[in-house]
Length: 121
Ligand SMILES: [Cu+2]
Image (cartoon, rainbow, N blue to C red; front, top):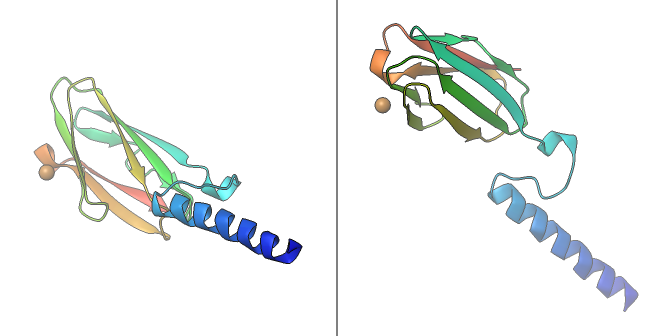
């Protein structure tokens, strides 16, 4: 009886954990599940930093502030993100944990001149 109850409690916490993973949110508190915030600003049509870094295997919250007076469109093919940022505006983008790599992003309104890379290591 006690054994059976222990199993069912474990199953419940595993499925809560699995549901949390499916949502991209850690259900169990641990530092690996804490989102890492990465802030990027856009000014004079340049990203700063142009190559922000983030740890691999942790969810990332990208905060992109457009300090120009004109709109920008933050875009990344690999992240499948496309977000308009009005002049003076800020957007927040949630990313799943990533493998190490160099992930390109750009301003779709000024793609030739305005790009950056998220360096995950
Ligand atoms: Cu676009």
